[in-house]
Amino acid sequence: MGEVPKRLVNVRQIANGAMAAGLVLGLAMLALAGWQAYAIWRQGDLVIAGHVPALIGLAGVLIIIASVVGRALAGVLIKIEGNLFHSHDVLLDLQDLMRAEQLKLTEIAENVQLSDATKSIARREKERKALHEAIQDEIIRGNWDAAYYLVDELDKRFGYHGEATRLREEIDAWRGRAKEQRLAQALKQVEAALGKYDWQRARLIAAQIVQVFPDDERATGLDGRIRDAFERRKRDLLTQWQDSVRNHDMEKSLALLKELDHYLTPQEATQLREPVRALFRERLQSLGAQFAEAYRQHQWDRAEVAAERIQAEFPTSKMAAEVRTLIREARERAQAQPAG
Image 1 (cartoon, rainbow, N blue to C red):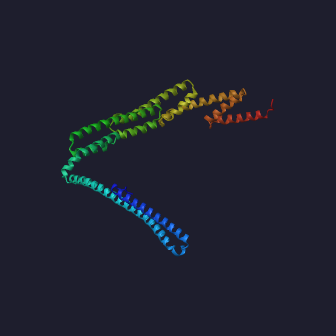
Image 2: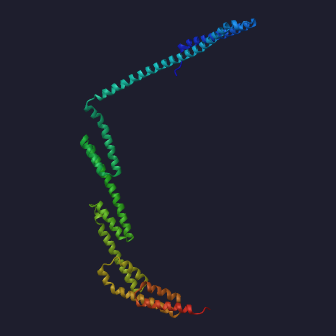
Image 3: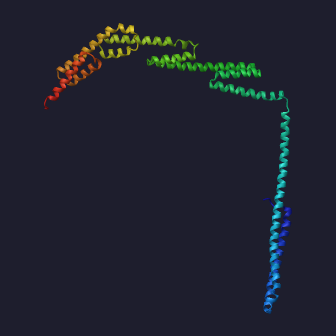
């Protein structure tokens, strides 16, 4: 609800005074009616003349009601007038706001009426800056094709040939540094695989490097690098194996022979067949001698260990079947003997 304007304060005071006067008059008439009714009652004529004080009392009540209702109506009218006055002020404010907006719209309309050439010049620097920022973003992400494309757009659409040339040189520099870092990291992975003699992984990484860097000599030379390392490792294993055979180091000879199996070609394996057979015969004879010595001395634990090695390393040999039978018989005799 709106506030009561100052100009209506006097009206409200008059309404309050009128209500107060009406209340006083009404109460006075009620008092007068009561006094007359009492006087008539004393005279014993209340039934006959009682209508006079009743009418006076009724008039007093009506005056009081009229005073209260009049004051309420006056208050409502004052509030309504105050709201109307407030709405009038709001409408004036809205009118001022519309005038201000109209000025802005007029200014916008004037700007819209600029020629296409003028608008193109106004947008030119903003578009160039946005395109330059996009080029820098693509460089940071390593999207070289996208960066070159945007530079071409800068050159063709806006004619910044000098800036386009500078940006191409910058992209080339970033691309070269990124390429060098990626290649160096990939070469380290190849070296790590070679250090572990993981030839399959080394060849896989080398193939990926050649696919990404087909024009780099360090990439195209990886196959030869891996092949040379493979051959060096094979020669080293062969030398160690031959030394262990000469030194009759059976354990080391067999371990080296298992690893050599991954390096030898079928032709090379054929050439080593006789030395390998001799090695296995010597190994089998050595284990057989260990078993026989332990069996003869009734050292069943040692005999059983030697027998298990013969069966594991030479499962199809005649000696494996023999030691299996001898160990079973020895266990049966040991179980048949009475304790203690």
